Image (cartoon, rainbow, N blue to C red):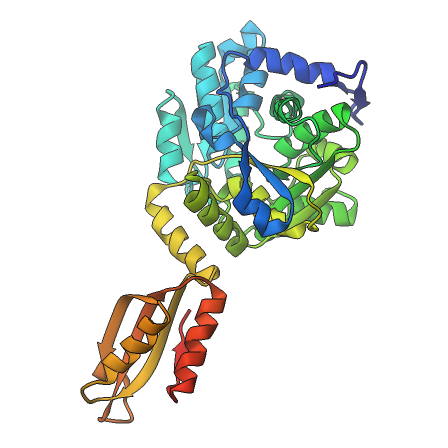
Length: 415
């Protein structure tokens, strides 16, 4: 990897950020991080027509990339600042990063998390000896509460994204990616408040100016995309996304400045596209990602098929086990892997067998069957059958629908 000298950028607040700052952050993190080597993915490559590599930060210490920025920031505090204690607001991953870093550095930490935060993230944060305060329905409400506690208790606030030292810590990911894959053409980065994307974009562009950096946001929380469209920081009226780690209403001023300068494009993806990416990652690579963590993989379909070397940064895997089953089912439905339909049949022997034969001939596996006479109200001679089958995708579903139509049987799709 070529190391450029004197590569820097001047921020509007007068701060000068240099590639040397990224290397310094990497040195601080050397004994803290787990090595997350990239994984080439034939599956995602086939999905998008590019050569895809996964950077699995879901395997990182604390299950997400956030330890990078949190440790870099807290390790640079003065002894007096460390004695005051730190406070942060977080939807989960930054909380664990602050908790783990504080534990290693012997600093008292308090974290304010939304009351809606998955229990796995709350308990994991508490395990580092952190005092957790649950407040509000989203990150922004938790942030306001944390700022109140900061003023009351004279804590040092550790911002989850809009802090230069935090961003520099996150930027160390770019060093690792380019060191491992020097001829990488593009990096896809999840975006919430912009700390990860700004740090990675700055470092990557300093080392490799022709690389393309693409940020990926959820459609229900696209504060960066809207701000870029308006050419100014814009606060969303509300956020609504399954990707709770990226549910941010307003980007940071520093992150927005760096993103506007160094990120080439920002795309948005639907919750269903995120769910599909989680399913594929789990099914084909045996890796678990949370909603925000899978944003980059969901964004692959937004790229033109050019056989380029593309790295997808899977930023975190802290997902509540109790929600995984629901996620899998929704993703299977979205990809046409589960097909549920109803059909009204004559209430006489042999009709159920007829339906079963059509499905068996098409290799559709029945996983649920509901035979209910009371649902057909206008006839005592008919019964409604609800069938759920496993399929191979949307084409298979169309074949099933066509087969019933050929037999003169009308079916109604439920999902």
